[in-house]
Structures are given as C-alpha cells and as structure tokens.
Length: 412
Image (cartoon, rainbow, N blue to C red; front, side, top):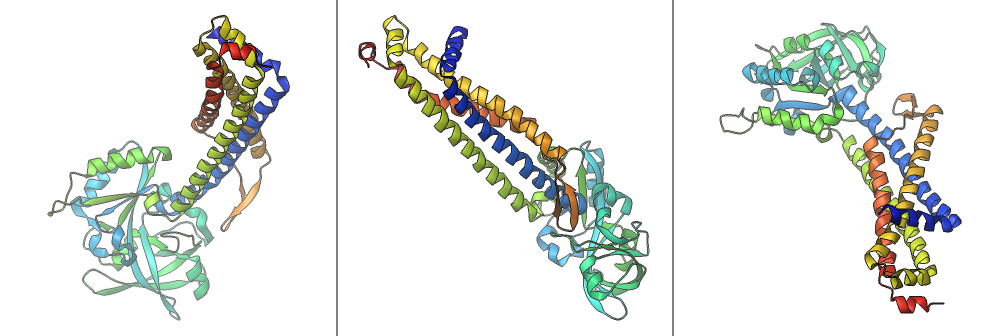
C-alpha cells in the first residue's frame, strides 16, 4: 500500500498545474464553508445566548399542563408543597445544574393613579434569577439594578406608553385563586428593555411582593428556570431530569411535571434551525465541488494514461491494484485540498476576529463578531471532502481497472 501511495503521489506531480488547480479549487470550497459555518454559528450562538441568558434559562420545569395554558398564567397549576420541594431537591443534586430560579408568574392590573393597563409579572428571587439568567441585568435601560421588596422593574414599552420613570409610585392589583382582589403600591426601580419572545415584555418584582399580592397561604411557584454548566450537555441533562421526575405522577397516573428546553419555548429556535439547514446545503455545495473537480481530473488521467494502464495490466498487475492506485490519487487530492483549505480557513477566521467587526442585534449595538469553528465541525468538513474525493475517483478507477490490455496497448 505504501508503494502504491508513492506511485499515486508521483503521478499527481507529473501534472503539477492540473493538480495545483484542482487542489486550489477544493481548498477554496473548504475555506468558504468554514467561514460560513463560523460566522453563521456566531450569530446563532448569540441569538441563543440572548434568549436563554436574558429570559428563559436553558430549560424550564412546570406542573403538567401549565405551558399549554401559559397565556392565561393559571394560578391553579402552580407548584407547591411536597411537589415543589421534590423538584428543587432533584435539581440541587444534579451536578450539571449551575443554578436555578423559582418564578411566580401572574397577570395583574398596573396603575399610575392616572392610567391603568394590564401587565404580566414575574415574582423572582433576584440573586437566584441573575445567577440563572445573567444577561437580565443588562436589559435595564435606566434605574437601579437592585430589586428589593417594594420595588418593580417595568417593561420599556409599558413605561414609554404611560410616561413612567424610575422612582415613580405605581399600584399592582391582582386576583388570587379564590377570586378575591388585592393590591400593593410599589416603586419603579428600573425600566427593562423589551425583547422578542416569551417573557420579553414582562415586568419583575420580588417574589415576596408577588406572594403578598396573591395572598398565598404557602409558598408557590409557577416555573423553575434552570441554567447548566455546559450548554452543549442540554439534551443529555434534560433526558436525565425527565427520567428522575418520571416516577412522580398525579392521582390519574399521569406525569406530575413537564420539562421544556429553550427550543420548545422560544420562536428563535426556528431561526436557529434555518441557519442549520442553510449550513447543510452549503456543505452539499462543497460535496458537488469536490465530486466535479476530482472526477474531471481522474477521467482525464485515465484517458491520458491508457497505454500506461495497458502496460501495467500486461505485466501482470491485478485489476484491484490498478483500482487502488487511482483511488489513492483521488484520496491524495482530497487530503491535500482539505488540509490546505482547513489551514487557510482557520487563518482567515483568526484574522476576521482580529479585525473586530461590529454589528447591531436588536437594541444592542457594537457587538463584536466572534467567529469560531468547533474541532468536530472542522473534522466533519474534512471527512466530507476526503470521502467525496474517494467517491468521485471510484468510477474512473473502475474504468481503468477493466481496460483490456491488448486494446489499451494499441491505443493512440
């Protein structure tokens, strides 16, 4: 095999210009794919981070049926008592969980004593919430980042429409489970940037204030947002948590809890999927480039070396060795193109990051592009190129191995 590889490389060097052009074309295709994957991956990761780290968390736990009715913020589907203690104990013992935050969500009437409107509110423990969604504080456009009892963060759109400023006094009125109405005066601590997605236009207040407004006789929460140490472990951790919570059921023997990862809660997941589909088709283009380039070169190589192939067959070279020889030539072209494209692609990605290209995303301005390519993605692209090169050389190699020696020797 080593001798055949040496012969294959020598044959490629006999046609230096053609080999160089083919390798360059493959390398350019690899560079294009690497840059596309790195840049679009950067945008996708930013969107995911903005969604999970400023609102949702990596995954959420609810009582069964809550998410299906979440638009109504049903208080009768809150977690309380033993059911709440059990799920918090499971999360505490899960080593992959970095932090989790309990939220009490409800709808209320919001009044400035002049105007009144409706609002969705999240009662939170500020310390736990900011550990779970660390970018939440970054959404504050004005005011105090400390959310203590008696204070509220108001969404930007509502504040702008009602002319609210930090320090203003407002009243929140809500109906609890038994139908009674209760209100509480609060001070506006800050104005919170509105964002696209569930929870992007919600207000926040301390969970003690939320419990007091709803007159809860015991501790209740609507959902638990969870943050993981390693976001890439999300599917495995979600499956492990579902398995641990599965034994707990309702009297009707239905699961008591339901778990949702961010993909099932955010509309941005569809955009992320579109980026993945686009990446898939770009990889198909790379395969097409490799197939056309290698097949063209190998067909020309077989045509130009018919007498040489006939001589090899006439002196007793088995068809299998001739087949292997030509496939090794295609394999070598694929390896050379993948190696050159990978090295140049990584260099261009590095230069792209050093250029510190900035762009805007929603209200956030001056974000710096941080393109990166995962080692697994780089290996996958290289394998695609090499596999495509071997596949493209198969048909010409079969043709060469099946040539009749007598006809080949008489070929002019």
